[in-house]
Each structure stands twice: as structure tokens, then as C-alpha cells.
Image (tube, helix red, strand yellow):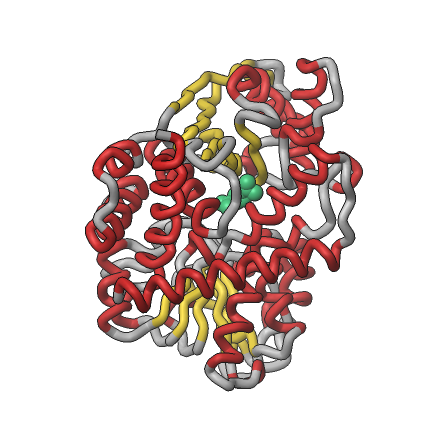
Length: 419
Ligand code: GLU
């Protein structure tokens, strides 16, 4: 299988070919502007010192400062952060934000750390990268296995070094650290607004739509709850070890799933019989991808929909809440089979859109209500959807290519204006 960055470049080349992308811009988008790799010496609870590797890829700043999350996972490497930062640059451009793209991470299994060790890793990342980040340079946010608590430690470390309170240096913070309430659910909410739009266009009722979700982290869990509250039927959910598959169409209660996961850590360990309104069976973590459903929502990590399972997918609509869940080869198969894919760079953009609103409020000392923030998000992501749909018609391309073209045209225009 190709690496995430190879996949990202093949998506770029395909879109570039459909729109005759400016050759200079094309070349510029094949490499990050800067890739920082740092070593993070961290004191462990047993008194020993361990060295972790930290990353920040600043892919491009054509439209504004670098923006993107930080992930903690043992799979983090230079290739992955490069790909994720490239997708951030496309994402911010595709939804009309005045931002570039960045991404960072630490190669660590966060489950192997105590809370105090996790805090020391978070603070070490900021100390190592302090000079290259900041509210007007590069603003990190949460990603896989990082959350408002981690952002709180990071912004505190940043403030201590800066000697001033700088809430705009990070987004996705807790409200007590200057964060916004709407940020916690915004990644899922953006995808949910798109799902609602598509459902209404097809004249379907929520109850007619059976949804399967891969991943039960921040994005997957909130998406399951949003669709459930709106009356959709959640027929499958999964975590990294197992899937819960509803045996009938009656569905799974994601609030109960959340409780069970909190107590037992994984669905694999849980007394899942009590979890659902109906019978449920437990399967491998990837079973949820090919299960019988109408809408599939990958909300975990890259390279989950591949040549090995794309033919077996039963959903007619895929909403990519994860970054890079579908390989380019699988994309071709899904396209041929008429499966509609709403790509990551649009579907999960709710997170960075509300991050931008958080940064903006911090910079301008403003406070918007939760409803106001959600409504702005709904309008912004819906407008991007409509603009991309129009480009798909014009260029006769898939939604992913349309989203890329929309982003690339914005970058091209901005570069032309500055020449
Ligand atoms: N990590 C999220 C993403 O992949 C959010 C980034 C942000 O809020 O800056 O889009």
C-alpha cells in the first residue's frame, strides 16, 4: 500500500491534470515549506528519561498562517505529518478560510503514558517548537488522541515562555483556557450538516438512513450522537479493536456505547448485549466498513478503504470524517460503482472552521454564542459544498477532485495577485 503522502500527491496530480494547474504552484505543493523534526527528552515517572520524536510540518502559507492539529500516536512519522499538513492546506482553502496548512505530532502510544507523562510530552513539544509556532505564524489544535486538556498544557507552556497570555496560540482549548464550546463537536457537526443537506436533496427521512461509523474518538462518537439525535439509525460503530454491528435495523444507542466504552475501554471488552435496543454482534474493527448500511462514515485514520474492501462496501454515500481514509485506487473503484464520496477536505473541515472562529475571537477579544458559531459553520460549510458541486459539474469530476480544484484555484488566484 502507498504511504499517506504518496496518496496525497496522487490526489494532487489528478486534480491538477483536470484543471491545468499552474506548474509553479504544482511544484510548490509537492513539498512542505518546512518540516521540523525535534527530539523531546521527557522525564518518566520512574525517574528515567525517554526521548520521543516530535514533528511539525508547515506545508504551505499561501493563504495565511499555518493551521492544523497535533496527533499523538505510535504511527506518527514524517511521511504522515507531511500528508496531513498537505490535506490541511487543501482543506482550509476548499472551505474559504484565510489559512494555510500544517500538522504535527509525537510518535508515542499515549495509552502507555501516565497523565503526568502525557503532560510532560505535551509541554516538551511546545518547548522544542516554540520559535516556529505562534498566533501569527502557526496555530496548532487537537487531532487523534489529543484534546482540550492537552491544548491547555500546551498553551500554558507557550504563555510561560512568552511571558504573556496568548490564548490565540492554540485552538481546541477548554472554555476556561479561552476555547469555544462549539469546537468539541464541530468536526462532526460540519459532516452532519453536509449529510443533512444530501439527505434533503434525495428527499429521504432520517429514519430511512442506516449509518455505520468507523472510529469512536472525538469525531466518530459525536457524529454517532448527532445522527442518532436527528433520528437516523446507527447500525454499526467501531473502535480500534472491534465493531458493534446491529443485527436488525433497530440500531445502537451511541450514548450507551459511550458509557460502556468509558467503563470498559474498548467495545471488545464490554458487555455489549446490554448496549443496544436490539441484538448486536461483535466483529473485527474493520467489519463496520463493509456492513449493510446506507451511509458509511470513516472517522478513524488513513488507508481504511482500500482495493481490498472497496468492492464490498454496501453504503451508497461515504462521509470522510477521518483524514485520508480512502486510497486513490479505492476511490476509482467507488467512483465506478457510483458510491458518492464526500471527501475529508470538506467533510471534516468543521473542526478547522470552528478553530478559525476560536482564533479570531481570541485575537479580537470577542465572544460568540454557541448557536451563532454553529450557524456560521453551517453556512460556511454549505457554501463550500455548493461551490464545489458547481465545479464538479463544470469540470466533470468527482467531489474530491472538485474540492481540490476549488482549493487550488484559490491558491492560484492569491499567488497571481501577489506577483
Ligand atoms: N485536526 C483537525 C483536522 O484535521 C483540526 C485542525 C484545526 O482545528 O486546526 O482538521
